[in-house]
Image 1 (cartoon, rainbow, N blue to C red):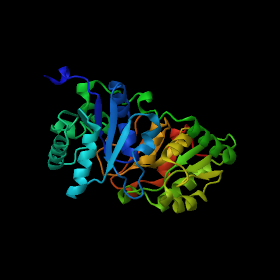
Image 2 (cartoon, helix red, strand yellow):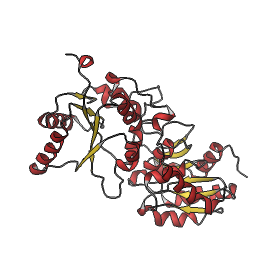
Image 3 (tube, rainbow, N blue to C red):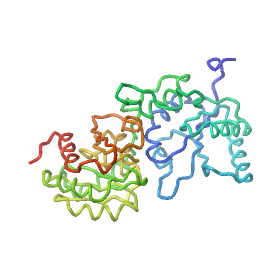
Image 4 (cartoon, one colour):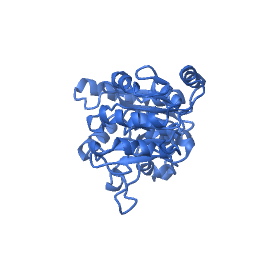
Length: 342
């Protein structure tokens, strides 16, 4: 029996690791799978978040894209815990595994597939066995490659076409409660005035532009945008830096660092004129909210691979983050906002 002739599964297990940004990038695939297997029970096998990270369900939880979640510790080697995990998978009785995670080496891939076989799953789709499925494809001679969302979609090609650029495919489908949260938060400080959102922290040091660079960029913008509000986005660890940097802003400010869920923050960013930041979860949430992004990228991945979906966005890509000129960045933000410096 060929893959195309295989019976429709009743229970599907989706294997996807990551946190906020990884989940937002995979959102078109999650939506596609929910529609493709509308009558099946979909379960998600994912990682426990690392310290300071938000779980996958904090992004997709309210959207009913999966019917159950099995979290585990990535890199677990305790035989008893692995046996317990295998039993939990068997209890779901999946007849199809969708391998939706990034390639982590041939040994890890082989070990994953063996574990799923031992756990009773005989049919696997999406596993990147070929070199073409493991890495993003080049799209031009200047080194640009396809985005991670497109690479994931190619891995599901046997099931159908995933339109990763469709606004509906990346739409977070905010609940009424999340929209009310956003409305209540921005009404008092801004009173109907326009605002921009900024995430000035970074979980990974190589993606941190630095407080000094952000201070220059925000000060420059503040001089040209005296009547525009500023919302600071991030986790609890980002709050001290965000509080310090907000002092250079001339207009009203709102600090949501550690005070909003990822989806609540995204609902606020959906109302923002522009998002400012570096490569990270808030950027991908802003893009999923159809907000234009002006972001700084360093050399840590291929051009285009982790750029925000949709657009128009403005990407400042530099050989090293310290090479990014804060005043030039501010000019790019003003250009994106169809403004010129005063």
